Length: 208
Image (cartoon, rainbow, N blue to C red; front, side, top):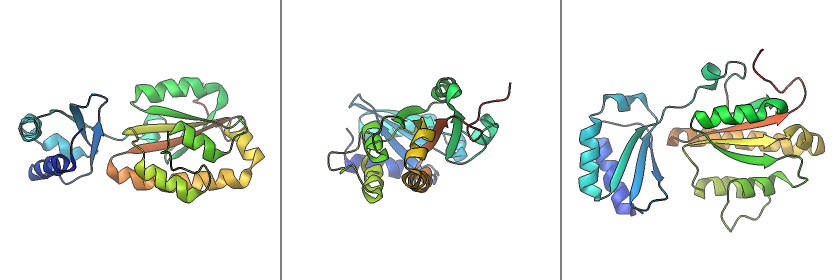
């Protein structure tokens, strides 16, 4: 893994090439490899090959440079609209999961029909740290700061309508808190969305 000093040096090099947008460092399962993902159109103007070579020399590591542009749901899925939360018909959930995967999203799944609280489901789906107590929104927010999320992450809450009927207050709190968390993660180059699936007029599928 790259040390804090190496990450700082990589950031200095990237900034010296004129890039002032968000930078996300995504560590690979291979400890000798690290990716730097940029969520800005400015990257297209950078001398990418020269930047890669300079990073390789400075870090003595295999370094990949990638351009991470957000998926614009309003454009790519106009039947859903924009925002961080999307409601999809349960019968279309598997198809939509496949489309998200094709768009580069890693899926994390909650089960609203399990009978478990949303705190337990979040901890399990996102592999929260051991200190996570399994209750309370402050603890959830703290864990989002510490957990290593993929650059594109879709949290799919299956059977969300069942959970909403069971505990409407906690369901509403979950949607509000997660929207705020996702909004704060966006400038860091991490696109996270919540996909609610269920039955009823609020849950959509593309027109036939």
